[in-house]
Image (cartoon, rainbow, N blue to C red; front, side, top):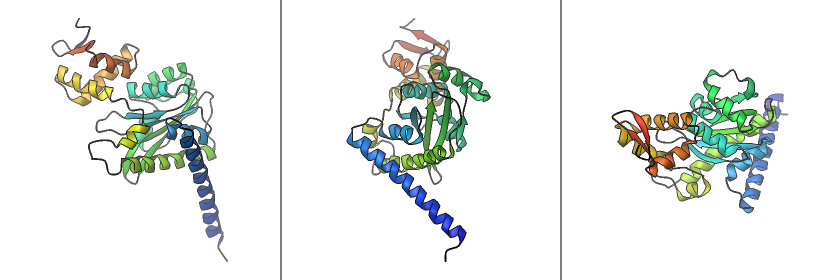
Amino acid sequence: MATFDEQWTASASTVTSRRLLHIFDLMALAESDGTQGLLCSVAAQVTGQNGAMIALASSDPTMTSYCASGVAGPALMDLEMTLGEGPCVEAYRSEMAVEEGDLRRSTNSNWQPYAASAVALGARAVFGFPVRMGAVRLGALGLYRDRTGPLSDEQVTYAFLMASVIGRAVLTLQAGAPADSLSSELLDEAMFDFSVHQAAGMVAAQGEMSVKDALVALRMHAYAESQSLSDVAASVIARRLHYQFEGRIWLKDGR
């Protein structure tokens, strides 16, 4: 006869398997419906949140947006990429789950600009979970909703399972692609904004600085001008915005 520990382990394994099957069923349904940003859509659905965001690690310190769902999801993802702070960024850096159940009363000193802007976008609570496979950090899963309060134990469990599914999906989609490029499957599913990296390269050349410092300069300018990082990058690429090395200043339309 099985011991109590053996019975509990078997029961827990069964529950986990059922939850994974539920996730896979939702993914199959979303795929058949042609849902864009499938992984984000399912992550929000399975955890009962208003939306989800997935950010992936890139070759430089700035994370890259993979997908976002929900009314405020894309704007919240862009906010994180602009400020370099928020649930996805912190979960990735700390390799731990992040919970902010009430953004209006946030005590996280590193989130002051993010929290105020996220509330303005309609978010009241945000959560982050690291996406990794073994020792390899791949990115992070972010969740948001328009009401305050913590996640339930079941929602946390589903979030961790979803993060694991995302990690396996990314590695599967990327399999066989050259080390310095992304697979066509990953690109087709994603909402990557490569303009930010293109603009950083241009600013690095203009300001005679590293790409890392150029990304910081872009984020700071976007925040100072209350613009999205994508919009600032578009202005740089279109030559409407230029970083002058001599004066360490930004020039608009050549002035």
